[in-house]
Image (tube, rainbow over all chains, first blue to last red; front, side, top):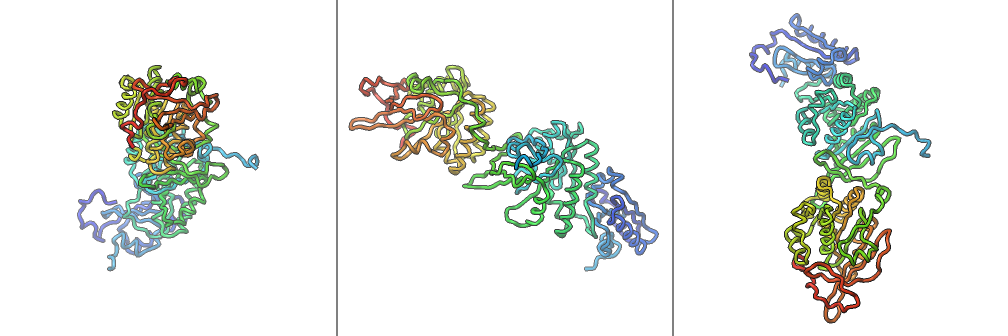
Length: 108
Length: 489
């Protein structure tokens, strides 16, 4: 997933940046609706006013699915800040999503 | 019973031998499961099915979960299938459905994305066939059996709804692990083919078996197969008697006396067995036939499993049979291989390749007894019965020599390795001893569809070849020493 643009400065991965998220859904399936609701709610809580969510329906735009290698839906891609991350599922597991998006530090 | 059953429509795979086993092909618009261990040829089977379809007006989509598209193209290329050209002309599409492994799972998901991608390609090239290679890889991303089954059902229904004839391949291990998912897959698919790559007696063999075929009959045996230069080749042992052409016209044995005993000679496209103890002259009789055929400008392929080409030519020269010019003029091809060098499937493929290239009218195999060293009696039987079937179908005369041992050589020689039903004629050679000397005798034991002499005919091997001394004369002509150099002991 992080094969290109590795050179982007690490500073950009800091939680201060603007988040560009791309959500791939399939029609109006239950999981797709849940995923959209979940990511909106998460962003409103943790990334207020510094996020953009693009939704792409693979049923309508199948070339986009090929371009992004979307095998399962819903799939969320964190486009920026780099590195990109791919999260599969309806995003109901909030702690996992937040950690993957680097919004909160992983507790170890 | 049979008439009540609605005949289902089938799609020929055009994989050599497979359609015979499946009695026509895989079910039209349904799913077929191909399972097998690593290296069993699942991917090749899928590729061949897809490629043959594309060549015959049925475009197809190949979905690979494991290998990169480029690796698939190269794999196909080694079989002579140019996928890149087919992709360009819109006959084949390859979908690389590989997850990187870095993905994070957070909640439920389904394979709608994959179906959308495949569906897009199907629509674009008007595909009728779909191959999904290494489906087991997709299943790994699911944690539990229930969701796995749900997704498999979804995939299955999706394929069926679109009336796509599909082949799904799954890596299966023989250890019984992960049994549940495969059980479910086997239940779901309409046709299940199991590929097995096993090692017996240090030799690798491949076997294919059809486990089930909903609504259809199928060959229930295990069938040996090889992965050759041009894909998978199966050797279904169909009803030998029915598929064979009738015996052909007469062909001289190269010996006037023997021709008389056979009421005119051997029959073309028949299988002749020459049996006898070591040193009785089996190779000499076979070589006499070969030389006579070559002089008539008929090609002879000599498969020698016993001695080197040079040793054979030199031994035959001592007996007055000079094969050198026949070999030089390419009328005679001597192929020597050690039986141990490969499995019987490999030997069979090698022989078939030579037959395809050389197109002989006659084939000589020296000796049946040496074929046992291919691994086991079963391996030798597989090799011989299939080779004989193939050459008979092509109208090639086959002469097999068989070395017998033990005092009751006659019976053993006849039953030999258990393939006597495909043998049309049997010539038995033996030594007859008295107080002063040892002499050779020849007897035609069997000659299907023809009269033959029942006399034990004395013969001698001179430095001018085989001769039948006049029986009214005492058999005192100089005979060669029993047991030629190359067969000492």
